[in-house]
Image (cartoon, rainbow, N blue to C red; front, side, top):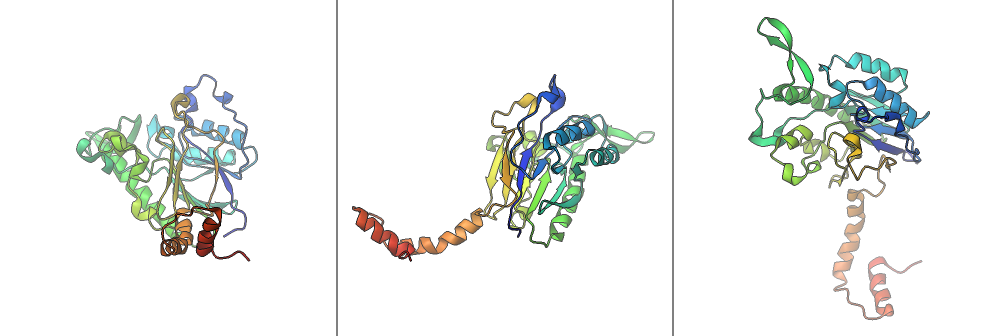
Length: 306
């Protein structure tokens, strides 16, 4: 592990194409090492989004993934080569089944999509997603395109999920591992009242087997237009900081930063406190009536100071 843990500036779902003056979004940059954006900056125009991210970050590194809206008004995957060129031109690291090491951190990322399992029986494979995205498909008179369906989305999710697993498994170094996706990786990222609905299926998948390994320090996602801050028992943190359409998320923090690895993550805290809690239980009920009694009680637990 490096001595200095990089600070990440986390943003997503700016949807700047919905604003009359997109360049008016110019927050004072926080103290950060890498700007991490989880997609949906500018609908149907990744290059515009990269330009904005470069303006925000100044000369510091930018890591991002494409959101679903960057694919709108195109055939799925068709826009990726041009997006990679534009990202390179703006000095932005676009992750689509890729990995990169920056500022002492290992980043892996992809759009991810979703498997719609959280929607339960409310969706069918041949149902349309409502996205203005087309996919290549055999039609009545030969090769053609059709609107994106649930089944096509699930197929794409499986491809990108498998690639993500490969990238995570390949990381054996000491650097903090940060995963960046547009879609959410855990059911609890979605409000409980939405479970079993189209919204849940469209927004998140259950990647708990991957998250529970404890190998991932931080998972940054977007897509959902509410903020998410979760700490799993494995020690993995999940964070989402979306602006939402026309900045509708009242909890959006335009200057949100956090370390790529929490020094005191839940597992480390639990392991350090376990012997202390055991000693506290052995010491009996905590009911001191004077300062002297309280000090004696604490000395029994923590030991005398040197």
